[in-house]
Length: 89
Image (tube, rainbow, N blue to C red; front, side, top):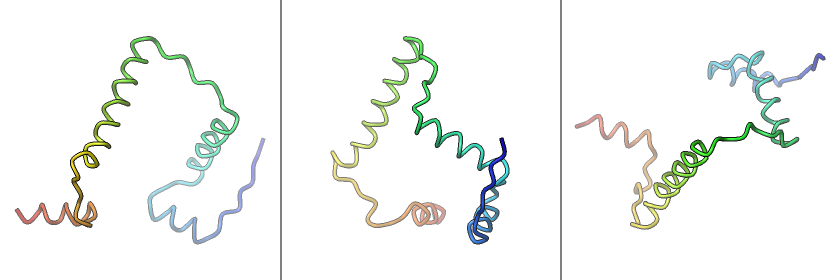
């Protein structure tokens, strides 16, 4: 099967500027989109893999909740600004 895709020049230029090769990137995006739309079944995880995934999810949830719990903010700075600030020291 062959699928023809028309991509606006502006989007193609942005993708190229980011180093994306559209010929290989678009089929991957299509596969991901179809997998989520059709709900393709993923291979079953072993018990150990399920426990590890649950521990990872709990750790991520704890990290995300840390700032809220303790009222920590970045003071309106973005990550790039913080990195540049760190370079001063």
